[in-house]
Length: 514
Image (tube, rainbow, N blue to C red; front, side):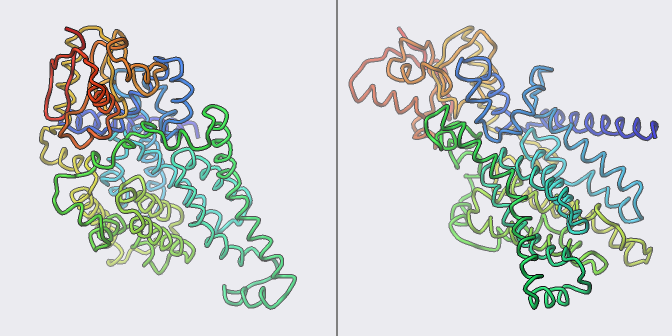
C-alpha cells in the first residue's frame, strides 16, 4: 500500500514537471496567451494598491483559477498559472494513467489519447483557465455517472459542490443545472422502491399509482433542489458581497477589466480572416464541424452497444448542450473553455466503467488502436480551424512556429518602458496589462484599481510622467479610456505638453512635460 502511494505521488510529480517543461518549450517558440498575462498582472495588483486587494481578490474572473494560481506567483519568475495548470493536468493524467494501468486491454491504448490529446496538452501548458474547467468537468460527469448507479444523496451533494465551483469560474455555467435536470428525472424512476423491470415498466407503474406518483415527483424535485442549492447560494453570496462593497448588485460583473478579454471581442479572435465575421453572423456547418471535431471519443462511447444506457444518454445531452450554446452565441461559446465539457465527459465515461471492454476480438483491437489516433488528429483539426487566436497559435507553435506580431509588439513596448527607469504611468490597464505586468516595483501607474485613476484622467500632468495609449487606427482605440480622456482635453483646448518617445502599429508611449 505504501509503495503504491509513493508511486502515485511520484507519477504526479513526473507528469507535472513534464507539462511545465513543455509549456516553457512552447513559450520559447513564441506561444503566449493573454490570460496568463492577465493573472500575473492581477497577482501584482493585489499588493500594489490599497483597493486592489479586495476588488481583485473577490472579482477577478474566473475567480477560482485566479485565487488558485496566486500562491505560485511568489515562488518563481515563471507565472503562477503555468504551475497551477501543470499540477492540475499532471494530477488528472496521473490519475487516468493508474486507472488505465489497472484496467482492461482498451484502456491501456486509450491512455495514448490522454498523453497526446491537443485539448489536454493545451490545458496543461497554456497558462489559461482551461485546466480548471477540464478538471471540474471531469469531476462533475464522473460523479454524475456514479449517481446513475448509486442514487445516493452523497453523490448528489458532490455534484452540487462541483457546480458551486463552476459559479466561481463564470456565472453563465449555472446553466449546467439545466443539463443535469433530465438526468435526475430519469434516474428518479429507478430510485423507486418495490418496483422492478425496465424503464417503461417502472414508468407505467409509477404514473398509474397516486402514492408512487407523489413519491416520484417529491424525490425528483428534492434531487434538483440538492444539486442547485450550493450553486444558488454561491451566487446569492456573490450578489451580497457586491452590494456591500460596491453599492450595486452587478457592478463588478459588468465592469471593464474583470476578465482578460472583457475589453473587446475583437482582439482574442482571428480578425484578419475576411470570412470570419460573415461566418459569425449566421449559423453554418463550420461551427457544427468544430464541435464534432472534439466529439469523436464521446460519439464512440454513445455507439458502444455494451455501454450503459445512462452514460450514452448523458453524452448525447452534452453534445446537444454544446451545439445549442454555440448556436446561441457562437463568438463567446465556441472555445475550449466551453467545449471541453465534451472531452471531459467522454474521458469520464470511458474510465468510469469498463465492464463491456473484456473482449479481445480483432474488431475491438482495431478500434482501440484507431480511436486515440483519430481523436488526436481531429482535435488538431479543431485547433487549426479555431476562431480563437490563442488556440490556433498553439497548433502553429508546435509544428511551424512564427514570431507573433502582437507578442513582439508587447516585448518592444515593455522594453521601452523599462528604459525609462522608474516612472509613473497612466494607462488603461484593461488593455495594457501585458506590458504593465513585466515592470518591476520601481514603476507605479494609474489604472482601474488605482484610487486616483479618475483624477489622473482629468489632470494627467499632475499624476503621471508617461502615458501609454492605443493609436487612433487601432481597433481598441475606442475602448481605451485614456485615449478618450486625451480627446476630451483636446476638445476643451487644454494644452498638455507631451512628446511621443515610442510608437508601433498598436500603441504610443508619451512623455508628459517639455
